[in-house]
Length: 416
Image (cartoon, rainbow, N blue to C red; front, side, top):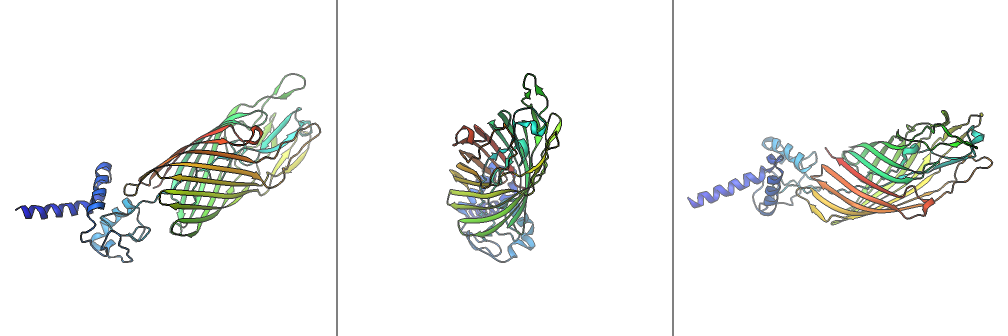
């Protein structure tokens, strides 16, 4: 009887291990079962074509016929490919497949524009006015922000607070938010991403004048503004055991509001941003490095109009962006897909073309400056479906060479 019970217990343990996917909603129990099966069930007889916990297969028998229903659940739970095997070819249904731990770049935005000085020549009172072009007062959302070098199926949201942003005619805090979606194709080798930024920022309409000789522009109120909606295509170029290389193209649409002064349109929102980029992700055990290098071009410029008939077309500067990230998965459970990783980032932005400004007598000048930003934070991953991050960025440049005094950002994304 004891031998029978022993065999019965062994059979029950085998059924429990192979049926662990039926416990998807019981997270704690499922995790315990997965860990138990991973450590103790690797010397049993496997169905189909799998012979061990590290078996590599190219057959379909395991995922067909009587195993078909089970395979569908396994694929959903273990993130398998269409053939029922993991990305590395492992098709062991009892031990499961390891999760992919793909880090996200936190990133930052750029707030700079062209200067129009001593404004009577454009039908406005005396003063200086700097108008942003890419994204308007919402800011230029760089290609690396809330992005990864690897194509991913996801929907995502980010929220950033920028303190003391240099928005003419006076500094102002900006609360920027971003919604986006990314969809892969070509068997996960490429993706299309759409991002929609908006912010509580300086109003595009400058409103009235302050009284007094001479009249000056009243500091505009904060308002909700939509930025430049962008569409990004990304493709994997090459992969090695530890490193992935990708490239792509961002197209930023002129969906931000026209800039207005005293109710008259000063600058059209016409600029189409074209940003080619390359990226990489290098992983070595728990350590990872990620980087983006991109160049933003103004494809067509924006039309400037003045109240006295003055017209001009100005182009935003071509901007070179270099964004680097280094992190370490201090917690990484490849069976449950739970991970925690502190990370550090460095962001460098520099103009690679001259500033296209319209300056009139008595106007000032706007310096073309390089911006250095460094920061760090922590990101987490749960079951590869839910990902989040919290980070702080601080400028390394002098006061006139920075977009903001500091940035605090939150990231959240969901992978179906």
